Length: 555
Image: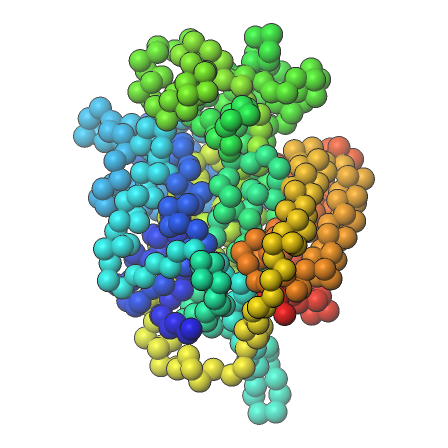
């Protein structure tokens, strides 16, 4: 089946929904999302949104905190734009009905928390379930908009790219790639559809599932990064994977995050013997930047041989804890942990990818009419280490900027007919009618597990040249197996995700090998110092013409 819309949005988190709601005023919008529309990283975000809304705060302080966290790689113009636009975007959400916690007066309309790396209280929140509150309001607004159409359980396979040469007479001035849509798998009916659009917005989130332990939902397999790379877009800074310091350590707790706001409210990290240790690693102690805290916990666990450390907030008033962190309190209590009396067992887990698809200030990628917003994008805001709660802020601001750019171009885009475009690549995937999926699923699940363990052990919080080289060799073998032994497996979402996961793992490793220094989230024992003369720049990767192009399809 072929669909045609003005705009195609891939992903239903805060980035995709915010863009869709704004852009729907100028055209029709299709939102395709690989699972349920609420199954997004946004929905699991606990802490909140960083913005300058307090009387003792300033744009300059927020900018400085962001730059300090980014360790020399933030783009100043991007940081300025995002920080200055923050208050307006937060007020838009509040006007839509997001139930942020209220402040004490008209001068302080929001209750503002503090998290690691922030020098002021500036985290707007809805208790400890901010992302869920935002997601529910945005989804309801999108469903009520007649210009927005949501397709659940639809997974993008590859982008539809047109090669265009710009000529002056017989001389070719430049070659240009233009995005015209995407091939999309309807996972429930196992059918491939063609979605044509004037522009495509990738809002697919991160790639936490490339690691064995992560706070991310299962959908975070790096799909947007993989399809953008295969199409020829430029990606950058994939070596900077943020490991959240405090994920709940319990056999019955999958991917449950203990918000950084717990430390912002006085929670202390202690070892099994009750000894606080962060004072030995940073002057900010428990409120140090995430990369520092994650490495400190990793070091303490390796020194002691313990499986976890503990986060203790039991010294605060019990009623305050229950009101401020109702979700965390109830979750821990269901597992036999009363956080008003007991310390919480925690470990670091892959949480946020600071790199991604390179964009400009409007969210435009290196491919015309292809945009990227949110965690899948590398805008230059986060640099080598994201400041806590800047992620939802970034998504809102760039969704706003991208919607303005798309709306201003909509009239000129419509003058062309999408049905009259020249041949594009890749060709539509052919679906197999074979019945080999059941017997071959072991190949998919085995390689999925191998990739995640490989990345955790060799490309984790602390790296070495030897581990990275071994990881590169291993991932090359896995990729070869995927290409040679799986082409006859009937097309399905698990196979697509495995191919994407393998490619994203390979790109993370390539970026990590290139950067011969330690900076922010990338810490290499063989290059422990920061090297500004040579490496105060982005690490860029792009698909070479000689690389084999394999789209997520089967014969």
